[in-house]
Length: 259
Image (cartoon, rainbow, N blue to C red; front, side):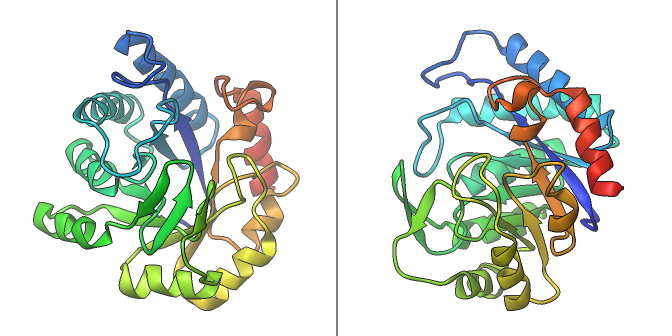
């Protein structure tokens, strides 16, 4: 998947089986995911990233089998509905091995890994990397799935003092990440242009993506430094992350990003 000025749209899944707010209908989860995916794909986005956003509170490590099974079913439906659009998977908080397994099974092209190197303190407690097993799983599965790793990801702080540059280098050179994601402090919060530049300078030649807070007003400037934008919250109706994707907002952001 080419990342040059790519727009990656978030498909925030409704609560899945086993999560506290699970409503009891997989059909409803699938229908909502298909509607959001279609609104993104039909209005100019280049790729989709599925995420079990509704499953709060998130597991600090491996998720339950029910989560993996449900996410795989939804991903398969989305992949079949919009086969022309590359698909990615993120299993929150940071179950990269589950994301990789799902991606391999459904033919997804990439996974997002929130904690791929070092450890963080988050609302789940201490969340640690599992890059060792993730990379070995990828080799054993023979999976052509790229790893997009967060640099000091949102909703968390490093357990030990480490600057952005060193974390970026560790993710690439020691964690073997294929691309890096730089975000604001929380979902929907803007990504600092200065942070993007610092990561870009630390690992020249590695793709850098914006992970949060993109708006039509900031898209072009962010793309002057970043290779791609991951967008979710602003695209929802009224800009509320809990709402469905608004096709008119999708078109407006695409126009702003591409001129």
